[in-house]
Image 1 (tube, protein in one colour):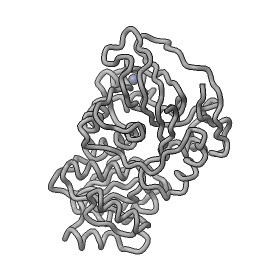
Image 2: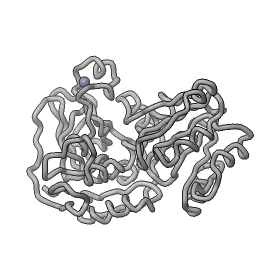
Image 3: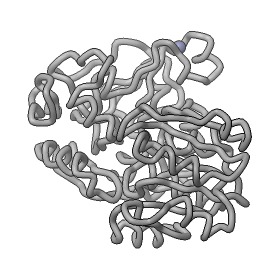
Image 4: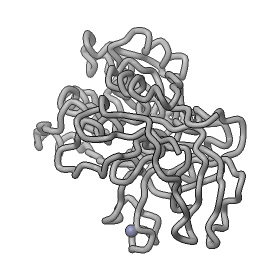
Length: 345
Ligand SMILES: [Zn+2]
């Protein structure tokens, strides 16, 4: 069967569409899925270029950290899925038997990993996965929307709800609108009823974010963001979502109100930041880390997706053979929404 693979280390130039063996069920709690579409996340780019401290995958390495498709076969122990179900995949995998796993805090499992990063990814005609990572979908999802949903929406959902506890009477500042997590966070903030302020270097992206419910948008290359936020709200913001890292960290803190929360799931411009402890305790800020989400949170977002309340924005749909083009667009940062790979039609 066809799969989009990295054939060696050194970047997306080593992507190739190659033939690999069709996967088979090896345990009664697994399912085999015929993949219709896969989607990329920044993590895919990081895996292709190499992550410091993370061992290289085994090559050829199937890429793709998100996917949707149809159940082709279920193991004997699987009760919540049937052949023919349309499904989405939670790309966070764990052992399933340790204390964090059995209490549905899988992200704290010492064997936690992400499909496409620590394990083979999903941009293949068929994949075999633990059934607990797969949920059925219903409603009017397009294949592209379902493919683009899980990782970004799950990451944003955990950040805004479980971690930052954003409420309807609060406001959030989201840096860099256009990426999958930022756009999912905008939708979730609006779903909660919170006010959403966003930034971008692109006037076009700010306009498009306004159409999705952003109350105000600021050009972070020209505007004084903390001042602009305070002018808009008459105070600092309750929550900042900053996954940019070094480049934005000081301005994120300056934009926070006393008692505000900063939540992060990434560090795209660098991971070394400074903190003045006197300001941290005096203003009683909370600095919150977050990564991926639990099976409970995954079920919550899929329910909202099935109800039509959360749907990812799609930038471009590529054929599987155009994988390098999709990676190039991901690397450019020009996209507004997700990059989808059509696997089978
Ligand atoms: Zn575990």
